[in-house]
Image 1 (cartoon, rainbow, N blue to C red):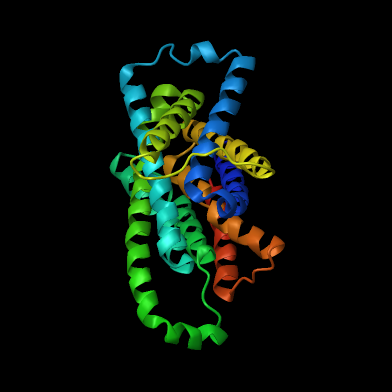
Image 2 (image 1 turned 45 degrees about the horizontal axis):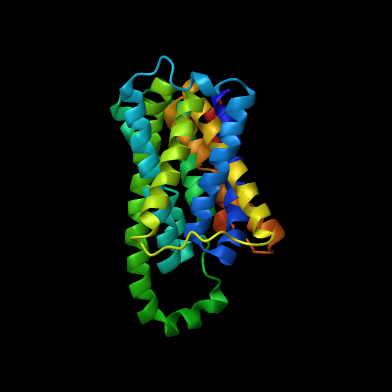
Length: 297
């Protein structure tokens, strides 16, 4: 069940990021991040209300679990800002795979926390992780080489900036999912931990908007359909991921959930006509092989 939910989280996040690309171009990445949290929080509150779980959020939970959940919410807001900023000032083909490398830190922290798995499952985790990095990488076509050489001075400065922010994003995501897997979810469960993350992340982005000179003006028009889609999918992904962490290995779930970047690349290939390089196809093969090995008992 943990593996299935981890894959479900990857699909939801992959589709969510693909749709968010169009919303971000219309209203800006910061506003998209904030309204995604708001919509997700509203949908989650409605779900908790109709299922009768709203009153159970605070029952049988100590303050330690809530403290970790609050820390995860603040860190999630930081992760989002770092990731979008790296895409803004850096080169997409470079910063995307670096940001998607966060499972390396999460798996390391999981092992240091005492988690163990079989040799074959370890090989599957490594294969899936490398496949994600390769698939998220988008090499520049050969016929663009001359253009790259002409702009090498400007690109080099942008590249160094983007890499730094992408590394910080990957490190933050790595710590975030370790906190979820070993601290927040075990103490609060899947629903309460997602509620806490949605609440704290939205509040953090709202409070930081003014000093960061970011607009939270309400969007107009059909962009709300895009925001609603992203908000529902992103919340669903967090729910699937957190419930997966209850039933499965943190290392396995984290790596499987990180497949979202590969899914986003595939959607761009199918719907936007973007071509996949041979290296990316090889990455997809590694992912499929890795998922098969992860299921090896």
